[in-house]
Length: 266
Image (tube, rainbow, N blue to C red; front, side, top):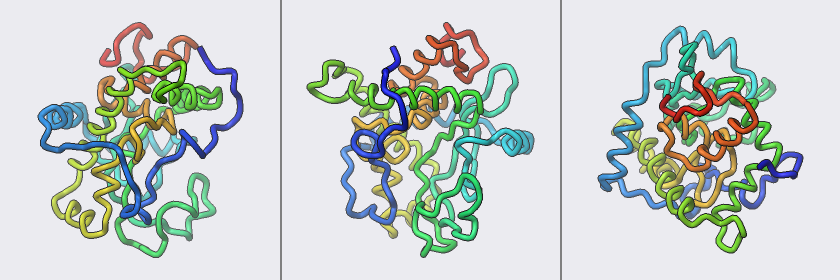
């Protein structure tokens, strides 16, 4: 059931943890990523197999339908990880793990922040950790309502040892899912860009941090991150699974154009 808590989630405690690349070399992460693990390698291939081409029609649709959670124009879209089963429009995009640094001249425009990344990099390439970007407006709004109701904190509690709702099995699974997300993100980089990341100290951000750049395996932070991963991967995110269950319970859009009782792959 939904929490009775209201208001915006705090940016401290369980909702913090996204890595700022300016401090990448000094940040610790407990996400364990073994790129040689057969299970991880298999997941990377499975994620990649789900990605379809990002077309001009998709781009036109995005320009007309993106309001909340606007994607930075400096982020490169490399594919579509999930589409609406009826309309065919993108539900989750796949984005490239590097982008040009933030341009402060655009700071006054809606959807941009002057506090992202390092403006001194100018046109340099810096990490973009949000590999799967949820874009379906109805789903973005529905997930936002779950966050407003306190579900980020409630779901985080399930990963906290000693909390009455602690789920050790889910916590162990979620740790592995963080690693699979990180491995797929790293696989998107060209060899040249991997070398760039190693040189700049960004490997610790893009290879060794989890979903959306989270540093700790018990962190949730944002349900849009988690649900985007869930849809993009065919269900490989326990927080996304819990999010979907709440959306179904409340009769909200789940982003697949499917019957609510159907599995994520439809």
